[in-house]
Length: 222
Ligand SMILES: *[C@@H]1O[C@H](CO)[C@@H](O)[C@H](O)[C@H]1NC(C)=O
View (tube, rainbow, N blue to C red):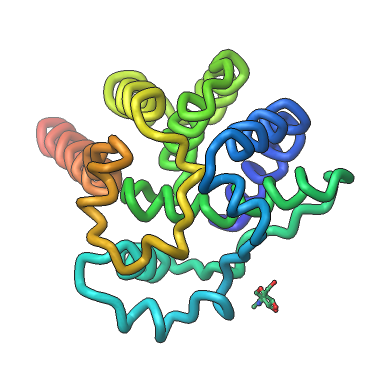
């Protein structure tokens, strides 16, 4: 199920994002020295280029360890990202690939889970960060979320995503491979990203509260 959410969002990304999103990302990379370097080097992120053993050997609060911790917590690997298939232009295909592979780093530094609610929050952040119009996205978000999720989205994660996305440096220009040993809090601060409220925690508490109310109702009925 997790994978299908992944794929839905990936497919949606590819369909709605191209060509506008990709051109916009590529242009953002071209005007940034690090972005240009990434385009020239075309590095790939997978379990061969960044092995779990290597990531585990990094310092406790490092970017690499945060990334590994997130992969393990979510039960995914850096190889689960679909290959980019539908983009003809070679450079744009690479930009899309890079975007996909970096997406997990965004999860890792924001600690947002790969449930739909987390993906929508992160997509909103990315849209704001790339300065893309929000209309299509918010329709998608509203259409697919459960009422409780939608409420949390509008009250908590949407404001977080817009504020942080607009304020922070363009995350597509982070050369993650060069940041792995750095302190993750320091990098977040440098990028201008604050961690959103822990979504897994909020979801857990909401579930517990719902259960409590149901039990209360049941005991009253007796
Ligand atoms: C990771 O990427 C490198 C460079 O493109 C490639 O040689 C290698 O086969 C890839 N590994 C996996 C597991 O996909």
